[in-house]
Amino acid sequence: EVQLVESGGGLVQPGGSLRLSCAASGFTFSSYEMNWVRQAPGKGLEWVSYISSSGSTIYYADSVKGRFTISRDNAKNSLYLQMNSLRAEDTAVYYCARVSRDGYKIDYFDYWGQGTLVTVSS
Amino acid sequence: SSELTQDPAVSVALGQTVRITCQGDSLRSYYASWYQQKPGQAPVLVIYGKNNRPSGIPDRFSGSSSGNTASLTITGAQAEDEADYYCNSRDSSGNHLGVFGGGTKLTVL
Image (cartoon, rainbow over all chains, first blue to last red; front, side):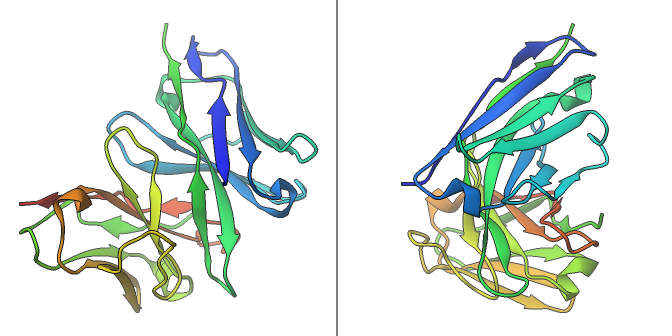
């Protein structure tokens, strides 16, 4: 059974840092691209960051570029999001999501974790 | 990045058919995927590709696409289908699934 379990959320002051983790199990983690997606309270889904299966290709949303760093440890079946210089607008539930592909130009998030809440407030 | 536009809210009578749409330039080149999210829960994939359903998703959910518009259709809506629905596709760079629609709140009357 595929499982993605996020951890590391919590309350942090503006300007602070937090590191999120996503523990993967039930599949060959090193074969899959991964993403972080967030959802502010009462708002829609917002893509945050992407990392390729090897970790060699990374993308960020403009809203987090230069402040957040995505990484992965395939030996530990884990995905990370280092969040620095946090702002109130970063308050959200953060989900890790696996990408699957089914032919050319067909890709989608097939599994999601349960999410971890990050609250940025003084 | 690019944008995907959804109607904020749609309602349907129990047992009737409802279509939820998603518009965006990237949909001319890439397929949309659709996610159902109920309060307090993580999103769940319901449709991907041309019209594919993951295992466990009822066949009353279907997808289609024309031009810059992707659609999710629920034929014979059930009370348990009341949820938020989000479309997603690759962004304008085509490199990753970087754009979500704003979401559609579906109410089953």
